[in-house]
Length: 314
Image 1: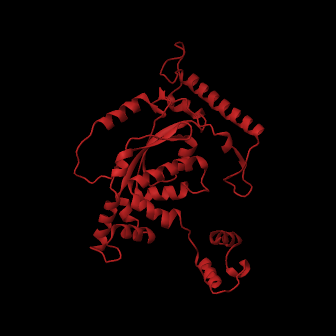
Image 2 (image 1 turned 45 degrees about the horizontal axis):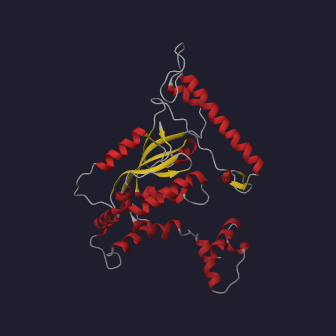
């Protein structure tokens, strides 16, 4: 049974309330920002969510770990914010690995398949061999239905016409409902655990699930360190990433801002808000600054990189 307000089961709600109502003293450092949102549910898409289950470390832990390497440091890195920005700017990843976070995520299976390509994490997923999956599917909003891009083989183009959108939504809903109906029939069990027909045997859960559509929701606990979390956000919050996984990456970025605000600021400056230029591109900029005219053919850049550079400089 699911709570429609926040997409949590009754058991999950009871677990969260129990955790919130029971507190314990600790002598370890805590991050005040993330403490305020601990266990809080952040809705994603139509039935999904992200919530913080646990964490370790904060901005100060990064500074502390770095100073083990650098000693007391010099005047340019002695101040905490300056040190963290220095580490981010020069890609010193190890101090960021000292912080870890564990998230509870509910997401469509096709997004889970993209997500799991980030292999530097520990994952424990809801077992459809052990339990019956909920009757919940991701159905896009009409504004998110688009044709295949002609420029990007793995991206979307223009929005579908109202007529085509209506048909697409109908087919997506129909196929998801039908596959789940078949799933329950094969199990001979509904999502409440009730036997459908006492006179026949059901197929095992591990086999009955194979006919489900990829928009069926699954859940997992995902634990990773801050360095790998930032790599995830960098790739999946990018405008070229699929919209559905961007929704989750944007939520996780906001969580990171609450958890390690100084690191999030540095990440914005040197990763997500910056660009990476080749040696050839830097040479083109130097020539332009010196007043020289440079064209694509003499620049040493491919047409694509040339266009990207000019877009950066607008």
